[in-house]
Length: 117
Length: 112
Image 1 (cartoon, helix red, strand yellow):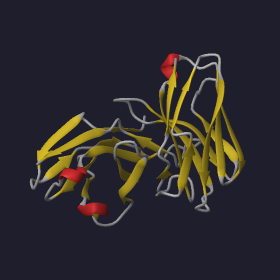
Image 2 (image 1 turned 90 degrees about the vertical axis):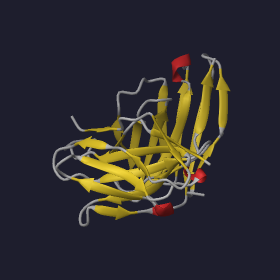
Image 3 (image 1 turned 90 degrees about the horizontal axis):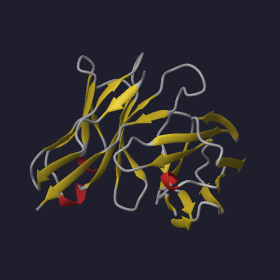
């Protein structure tokens, strides 16, 4: 079955330190991978995506993600965290199964990022 | 603003009520979605419409009834809900299926 796992419910980081939010996936075929962020009382916002090409993908607000095929991972990173980065982060993979669900995004359960001053 | 507007932002209803959630997008997108977000659980895809045709119903109970009258509007009709249906209901749209999603701010639903 196709799935996304975010092993950490919460990540705590001090402002100015690098941050990593982990994501692993299981999908047949080539994965299309996404990261979304959700600020309090808001819907999800697109951060970045990987479809093909360079394994390091750059996105909004200084975030980047590294695609690692051998480890089936797509971890989100930022070199220097800001307090304003505190939010809920979701990893997603595009469903590649044939049938009605093909093309839909499968989301992880989310990781709460807390950046302290 | 993402271009996807949901109303109301908050809704409290009893188990015998009938209410509707509304979603509107003017992005020219062809696909629209309803998701359910509960704490510490993956987002649950409920319904998908592509060019106004329903393409997905993820085993959602019949007390949730979607309606897509045109490519810009999506409704979720609610009837005799249960307390466990309390959640944040998110609407999203995309140019095509499987592409970048644009989400509304959601409707926080409480069923008493």
